[in-house]
Every structure is written in structure tokens, then in C-alpha cells.
Image (cartoon, rainbow, N blue to C red):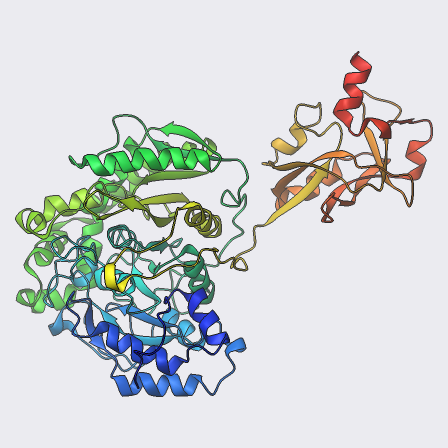
Length: 609
């Protein structure tokens, strides 16, 4: 099929689906474009590609199905070659280790069931050991922007395949940063979900207790779309866990607080361009309404050092123990050296490290009482291939400075594009938050990209023009929060406000009701209390604050409200209806009508005057 006559269309999911809806493209045509784009694979992104005729057959099958019932209908994707695809060899970057699975990994099957098209398996640092993309017998996977530089690893091919326009999204894994460093080095979004939320059944483990499947995409909206389909507890995966309500959504545009490393704790390894770009990022976060807080990062860095200097290396050894003991020479030299280092560790070493990790977790935990999210560079610099080969262990360790602590501390993270060095190489940042806050991170990613001036991949002839409007998606996980409109003694600064803040409530907005309320100062007190009554006529708009608190705390909050007040529904000025204070009609007998003041604070000021 000749695809040259078709106008270029970005493979980001929203644009691709719009092209499908308008009949400008079909899955069959996209398959032909994918095969053409991959060509001879000059960047060595792929280990195994599905035969073109099999891809065509998959496209024809999808064209007989209803796209409305398949959220990823016709969307091409790549799979890191330590994740199983039924009938296709899994090598984990080691030909001698290869096996052919009878069924796909849990997450791969969910994506296939949603209508996605698996294009093939991608290159990686062997056995997912490395952050640079050079540790592969299939050849170093080359950076999408400059082949003289590393692509990042271990999910190197998965990132490069998306950056070069071969596929719409890809799956990687992330134990120490493998889903974020390649995203930063190839100008992509990299979602590292909370460990256990995406099943790792069908994944060759690196450190099974710390592994997670990750997602590479062109936009945070695309990452959200894929995440929603891949998410799900797996009864056959002992490390799978259900998603919990995420709580306060710091990514939604409300006041939020960002923690960054203290002055002197940032390390860019002599890369002054990256240092300048990160300083610009901090100011950009301020412009998005963030309150910036300096955080002591030393306990985070010490946690990161535990990953490779502690007994978790023994877990890497355990993952391939039978194979590496039988065929040590089949393993890439630097990978063999690192992995066999875990063979000599004692059980006592593991316990000592667990004790130390608990101590470090206790030191890191108070940070989350100060900030909503942490912001760091994803990596401090982008090395050349020669620099990496000259000092493979040291340079690889540099790349893990801002990533290695994440899974040990049970954090979720999203890597985002954040600009370019003067030489045209990408710079990326990472936002991180406690477990189960994946959805707020994705929302923040969408806001971040929407604020960017022109979202372009800047890949020359292979560039993708990304959508100017950032896609919004239904949240994959509910917030577990309840909003409540308050109008009197519970307002910020008023006597009963503590009943909200002690329950973890956060301010959503200061607004007003619809113009259908009468407002009263009730008799009695202290404290003085208001009465808000909805009326059919003669009403006015009354000042309110909308606060959000965990649903688990809402019952006790309501139980503490004395008669004649209660909680009903308050209609806001924009037509929304949220839980809010109501007053029984008997309660306004003898009360003072203060409707004309428009709000509690204005009435209090008049009384003080």
C-alpha cells in the first residue's frame, strides 16, 4: 500500500484517533506507515519486529470491530523485550536466555484487548541492568536526537521507538529509573506508576520486590489513556495491589507546594546547560502557582545508594541465578560483574539494609507534610557513548542520582520534557509523590505540557506536531475526596476552621452561591454561626469557600455539626452543586437577616465597625 500520498499525522493517541474518526486514516494504513518508519532501524531500537503480514492481519481484524468499544483501537505500541508477548521470543537482551511464552504479560494482554497493535519487542540494557542503553549484545540503542549520545536505559529501545515515530506509546520497566531516564534523553513523557498497580506477571524480574511496568508516550494525556487500560489488580501476581484513592489533586490547578533539593544538593556533573534549564523549570513551576520549598535531599540520596551498594543486588542475582550460574559467559560483561556481586551477600546483610531503609524512610516521610510533590532533574547530564564506555559503572551511577530512591520509598513519578540544551539535546524533569498519587501526577503532566510554548519533538524530518489542546481523560482512579461549601464559622481564619484542617482538608476555591439564598446570623454562640437557606425568590449570591477533605473524614465532620444546621447541597454561582451547610427553617426564628452583606466576613466587619 502506498502511504506517501497521505498527509502526515502525529502518532499521539488523540491525533491518531481523530484521524480514525474522520476516516483520514485506517489501521491498515497506519501499519504500513509504521513499517516504513522503522525501516532498517538505524538506531537499534528493536530486537524483534512482528512480520508485516501479521501486522496487516491484526489491522484487518480490528477494522471489523467497533472502535467505540475499544479504547486503543488501532494504536501501535512497542514492548520492552523483558515483557512477554505470546508467540514472540523474550530475550531480556540476552539471546542465550531467550524463551517463547505461550501467553502475554498481564498488562500487554489488557492493551491488546483494548484494541492496540503490538509492533514488536525493543532493545534494552541486558536483564534491565543499567540506565544508559549501551549494555546490549544487540548493539547500543542510539539517542533519537544525536547518535553520539546515550539513549538512556534500561528501557532504551522503548523510548527511542516512540521518539522516532515508530509507535504511539511503549511499555518499559522501571526499577531504578529505567522508565524515566530514557524519557528525559528522548524528549518524552515517562510514567513510573506506583509499584504493584500495573501487574508484573510476564515480566523478567530485575528486583521483583521493586519492579514496575512503565509507560512512554508523547503526551501525559496519552500516558493517562494507556495507564487507565493497563491498570488492574492481578490475582496471579503476588506483588499486585489495588489502587487506592489518591487524595488531594495537586495537579488540578489548585494551590500546590513543590519541594526541590536545597542549595548545594543539586548535582549536574559539570553540565551548566542542564543547571540553567532546571533553574528555569523552578520559575516555570512558580508561574503555574507552585509554592517552592527547599528540602533536605540527603536521606533521599542515601536511600538511592542502598539500591546498588546494598543487598538488592542479590535480588538481581536471584532473578537469573540458574541461568548466570550455568552460562556466565553469555551475560554482557558489565552486567555479569554487577549481578554476580549479589552472590556473595549474606542474609544478615539484607536485614541490616532493611533496618537502614526503615530509618531512611522515617527521615524522608516528614517531607510530605511540607510539600505535595518533589521536583528534580530526571538526570544531571546526558553523557556521550564514549564517556559511558570509558567509565560504565560510574557514569551509570550518575544517571541514577535522582531516580534510584523512588521505588525503595514507594513513590510514584512522572518524567516530563522540559526544554533543550543549546546543542539541541533534550532536558527532562521528574515530579514525584507518595504511592497512589499517579492520577494527580498525570494531571500535573497535562498542565505542564499545556503551559509549554509549542509542544514539538524537534526531530527534524521525523518530527511529530503534537496537539495544541491537551487531551483530558476520565480519571483512572477516584480521588476519595469530598468537597464541602462553608459559609461562616468554618471559613479560613474563623473559629471552627480547625474542624476542617485537622481532617486534612485543602482549599479548592473561594467563590459564591447561586443567587437563590437568604443568609442569617443565628441566635446564640459563641461561636456565632450562620444559616444559609435556599429560597424561591428574593435570594442573593453569598460568599462561600469550597474545601476538600478525605471521604473517610467526612462522616465525623458531619457528626459534629449541631442543630439547626446540617449538610445538604449548595448550588454554586457556576451551577455546580456540592455538599454544603443548610439550616432548618426553625433555626432562623429570631435570627438576623444578613443577606444584604453578601457573606459572613462582610457582616463581621460591619459589626466590628
